[in-house]
Length: 401
Image (cartoon, rainbow, N blue to C red):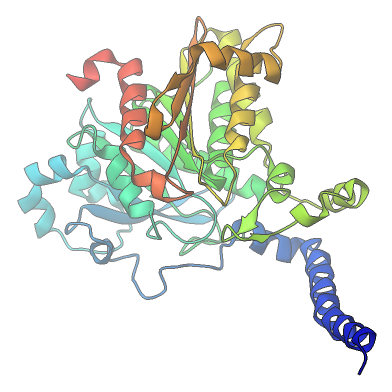
């Protein structure tokens, strides 16, 4: 066979797998326009990652006996949310014998348990309402180390309340943007009305997809009359909105979702029109800042991202930070102008990353960019502990004493 014949044969057979990949990718895009498939891709709620462990036995995740109380919270539309109330370890130590004597497992009435009493009756207790990312349950992956990092600054005072959204784990229902916001509102409502914790002693924490839920909830309360402002809102690895996210998102950090189509603007925009749940983080954050500035309410917003996050690129945080800062300036500020100000005001921490703070008469917006931490590992880092303590101390300077 001649050289030209060999080359022709090569391209002939090489084109077959390429065609198969193109067809499969086109089929995937078609499926993604349907609400059911889109829901599973966005929320990944069918991926439990805790199949071989019983969430009702938190001890199998490394907790002390009855350090965690599994219970449920009812939403305004009738769904049942599975939740964990996690005691800080020093508080647990002081009451260890009494806690160990209680039966383990899910409780139908959490108000009957000692852990709840320790939260409700301590005027110095702080509560972090934790909103996790897509996929898994309250016990999955790096979430357990995250809970420890959240309370590490004051292990005798900082409780954690985490929950699974509707359709996740043992919670009922199916996920949607409006549904997840209702879920978070129900959990915050439980914290304030059932546990009796005032907003000044509550911190809203979100990671990945949970950042969008967190900003929606913080904004909802800031827009109330009278407004409700929490001790702080801490966001780890946020994204601008769903449309921007899918244009950059890589499954498992490697497989691009829609980014290959970004070079075809018309097609890309057409496919974006099928996105059901918009999750506009940037708009919620802007509303949150504007509301607090208008109401002259003290607020604190911390945004943290690692440069080696391959799931959600860290430039999302740069954009989210700009939208927050822009909302705090009556005349606005361009992205380029903010970047110029960073050259003068940003603190370079070397291998630890960088910090930029934007202060107004009423609030503080803090951007922390880490060199390392990936998408999930960062949740167990001391930087998270510090963000929590800064927020609580700003709300009440006596708290760290």
